[in-house]
View (cartoon, one colour):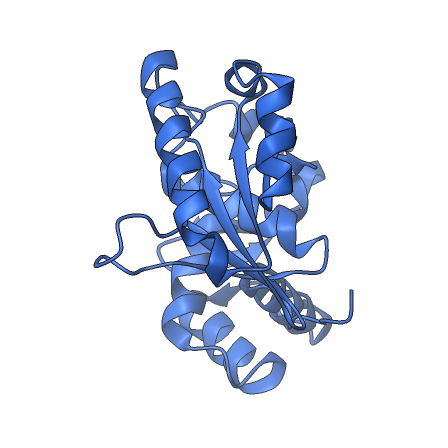
Amino acid sequence: MAYNERDPTWLVLKKAAEQLVKQGRISFTRRELISYANKHIDPSRPESSLDFEVDLVTVNGSSKDRYRDPEKLFLFRIGRGKYTLYNPELHGPIEKYLSVTTGVPTRRYVLKNIADSLRERGYHVQEVTQPGRTTAPDLLASDGGERVGVWVIDPAGDHRSQLRTLAYSIGSALIERPRYNWVLIIAPPDILAHVPSDTRELLEKHGVRLAFIQEERRYTVKL
């Protein structure tokens, strides 16, 4: 794929934190981390997005939306607004912190995971916010001249609502298809199992692809 996307926000913060530590800083404030990342790592990155991401990359943070991928959990909060790099030898194994996450994952968390998974495949991904178009996809993935509309079936929903959403997503994908090179619907394996093979083939001919969403430490796409 020809498109090379800039670093995701979590990586911008990680590079900033690592550089601060290399400079001899054992700890730093939230503001110091954000300012350093904005000034020295990626000046084009809005401070508001950096500030939001801090909670998501903090191992012992209270955010329910924080990452589950250990690579993206690298900060440890040691006081109000004060952080250091997470060290499992000092702070304990990461599983201890991941296990306290309770409840079902939020849709924002799921979409963020799917977006990251697509970025790892070389796509530039953004969330679609077009309230006037009810058939619009959840995400837009692009790779050079290629545009892909992406619909995501929430894995936290009940079986019946997931099936309804799948049917609606297929209809929406067919309507929106002319806007994109091809479109993608991502759903849990047991939901896609309800789609007959001949229907899959017909959808493929119309540029509508189906893919599994799977959870390990985080949600990923199996194309």
